[in-house]
Length: 314
Ligand code: HEM
Image (cartoon, rainbow, N blue to C red; front, side, top):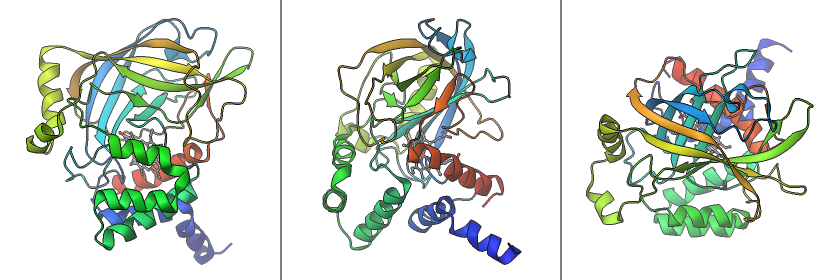
């Protein structure tokens, strides 16, 4: 393969085209993440409950507490988007206990429990359709209805998106991993689980109040709150059963699935974003494995491409 052919192949890869499409829609914001661009970092301590011992040999889910870096974010690719106009929020946690290969386990979660599509290809098509509906001057509601018509499979996630209420705080809403992961025990037996971060106290803000709050009211609120006391989340696991989908993050598991509390995260103080922070959802560390979910696997390359561009100051 000559250089020309190799370059063409690289730029045609979907993760690269995907990031190009995001830039085409939302502009290029040098040095920023191509999604979830504006965020705020904190440090905290995760204390495992001990209930996952025997389900996974992951070091951060045994008995000892472990430090964590947390990044809360707005999902919008443009960092100037206000908190109100970026309804989906993100919470990414990097556990500061590397496995034997130096991998620090990461959980990347967001405030909707299911994703809009099953594959990266259909998500890319949906982004292009959303861009075209916006160009035609349709309102948010009309765009959602247009997408529902074009992508009926995305009904659940799009309806949830339409119903999202503004949060009172980054730490007062639940966050979901969306994907399933495998917990692996010492004998190699795997069990599918999904994660949810459940806030110590859930609270929303009336829309009218959010509309007159500052555009980054959630960062101000978190700064003020952590000055007086820590905030916390319980890590809840839903245990998958035979037949539950592990490769379609646009569908939920049955609501009667058993859940267990894996531990508690206490968030203590804000910090500057650590250099080189990359919250890769496929960085599970030993004792946890990725499922064959095409969106999850795709995110590894898409995040790497976004990271490469922002590290180069593009
Ligand atoms: C095909 C699907 C997806 C694509 C293409 C995508 C793309 C991206 C990109 C490019 C970034 C910035 C990465 C960086 O520069 O470090 C990002 C960040 C993020 N994404 Fe996604 N994403 C997808 C699915 C999801 C899903 C399903 C979730 C929900 C769990 C999610 C939650 C987040 C969060 C919370 C961040 C911020 C991470 C941080 O704080 O560093 N994304 N995404």
